[in-house]
Length: 108
Image 1 (cartoon, rainbow, N blue to C red):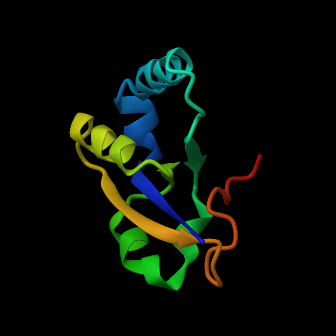
Image 2: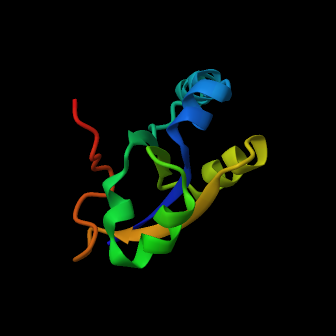
């Protein structure tokens, strides 16, 4: 199992009210310059929120939600410092309640 860290917010807030696309572009460019592998993903309506142990987190976040998931805790901390009205945490996966850490419930 691996530990995944997340930043969670309402989709409206993160993708419409915040200049979040710029943040992701900036970070992607930085990773490329450092020749570092991308270790973060933007997941609309993250399936990990369906895990029983995360029911309280889901209940507190306006829906539909969006998450930035990373294996890099420092990146999530950095994002949290740049944004307001977000929740952060972590989970272990794969597990019996979270089979795929990057799964989305969004319909394509």
